[in-house]
Length: 483
Image 1 (cartoon, rainbow, N blue to C red):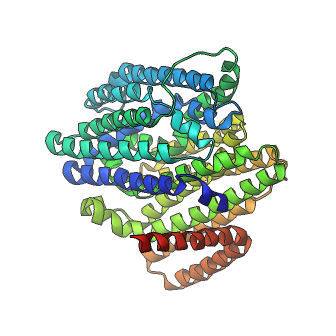
Image 2 (cartoon, rainbow, N blue to C red; image 1 turned 120 degrees about the horizontal axis):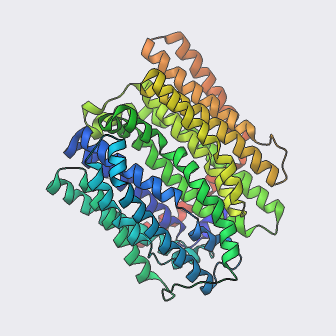
Image 3 (tube, one colour; image 1 turned 90 degrees about the horizontal axis):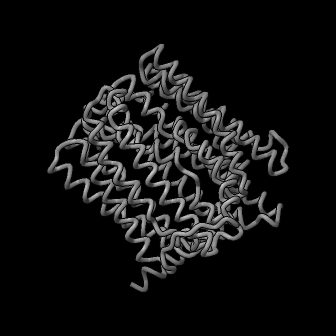
C-alpha cells in the first residue's frame, strides 16, 4: 500500500475518480428532480441496456496493454486499438438492431429511439487512444485521470442542459454521447505516440488467449452488476426502477469508485511481482484485507445514512423502508468483494478464472428471478441476489487460493466476517422497525465483538492505511503553507 504513495498521478486519479462519482450521482439527482420516477426509470433502463452490450463485448484489450510483457510495444498498442475500434462498431450495431425488440420486451415504446441514439456513444469510444493505458505500466495515472474528469464534466453539463430543454429521458443519452466524445478527444491530445491501427499475427494469439474468456465473462459481469435493475424494470416497470435506482445509486457509485481505484492501482503491483511469488502473495493478501474493511464500512455506513439521504436528495416520494435500504447496501458491498479475486486473476493473466468464478452470478440471477416471481417485490429480489453473490465470492476466493498456491480455505474467514456484518445490519433494521430494544442491545454487543475481531485480524492492513494517512498529512501541510 505504501508503494501507492510514490505512483505518479495516483492521488490525482483518486480525486478525479471521486469527483466523477459525485457527478454520476448528481446526474440522477438532477433527472429525478426534473423528470420524476417514470422518466428516470426509462433513462436507467437505457443505461442498463447500454451497459449490457458494453460488458458482453468487453474483451479486456486495454488491460492487456498493462498485463502483457510486451504490452508497451507500439505494434501491440496498434493491434489493441484496432480491436477496440471493431468492438465499438459491433456494440453500436447491436444497439441499433435490438432497439425495437427491446422496446417491445420492456413494454416501453420510447426505448427504441433512446437506444438508437445511444449507439453513437460506443461508435465514438472505439477510437480511444490507449496511450494512457501504456503509461500505467510505469504506474503513471495522470493521463487516464485527465481524460476521465474531462469526459465526466462535459457529459454532466450536456445532460443538465438537455434535461432542462428536453424534459425527458433523452437527456441522459445526450450526456453519455458528449462524455464519450470529450474523453476520446482528450486521449488523443494527451497521447505521446501517434494514433495508429495495425495488425500483428505474432501478437494476436496472446491477445486472443487473454481476451476470449473475458468475452464470455461479460455476461457474468452484467449479471453481477446490473441484472437487478433489469429484473426490476421488466417485472415491476420503469417507475419501480426509478424508485429502486434512487436507493441503489447512493451505494453503487461509491462502490464503483473504490473498485476502479483499487483495480487500477493494485493490478500493476501484482502483475509486476510475477517473478517473486512471496511478494505477490503479500500484495494479494493486503488487497483482500483492504477490500473486506472497505466493504464492512460501506455496508454499515450506507444502512445508517441512506434512509435519511434518499428523500433529501431525490424528494420524499422516493423514500424507502430502512430494511430495504440495508439489503441494497449488503447486495452492492458483497459484489464489491469480488473485486479482489477479479483483480488478482487479471493481474496474473488467468482470465479463465474470472469467467469460472463469475458463473456464481448466474445463480444469483436465477434466485432473484424466482424470488420476484413468487413475492413480486423488491425484498424477495434482494434476498435471492445476496445469497447468490455470497456463493460467487466463496467460489472465487477458493479458485484464487488454488492458483496462488494457498490452502483452498485460506482467508474464507474474511467472507464469514462480512456475512456476519450483513446479518447484523439486517437484524438491526428488523429490530428498529419492530421497536425491540432488547434485541437491538444484543446486536450492538455482537457488532462490537465483530469490530474487535476485524481490528485484530486485519491489524497489518489497518497499520498500512494509518501510515498512508500520516505520510500524506505532511505533504498536505506543506502544500497549504506554500499557498
